[in-house]
Length: 103
Image (tube, rainbow, N blue to C red; front, side, top):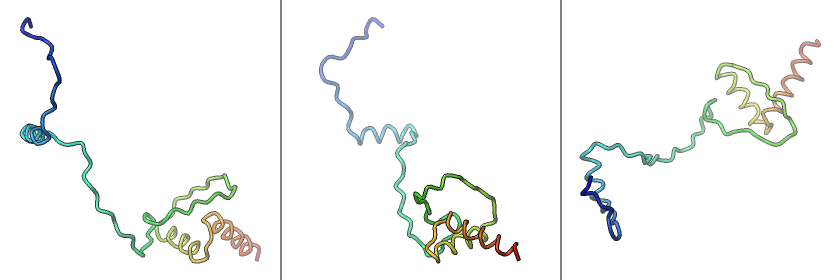
């Protein structure tokens, strides 16, 4: 410990190539994310890859249900075909169900 003395003057950072060489020899795993190629949008709107249908409408109650993917896809297809928001589609579905049950 008696031989230890603080460095005097500017400390130079090693060249990036030297850092890469040392880190590869030591099997250091980089934390930098690998670039991801952009995915192309498809016409197939499955239940996990559809655009969000979020709008400011004053509706503030969340209603969540579990359903199978085919039913969810059909629901969103109806909404998109008619230009309705998801909540508006749900309201129309409830109104239609009430009419059907009243018969």
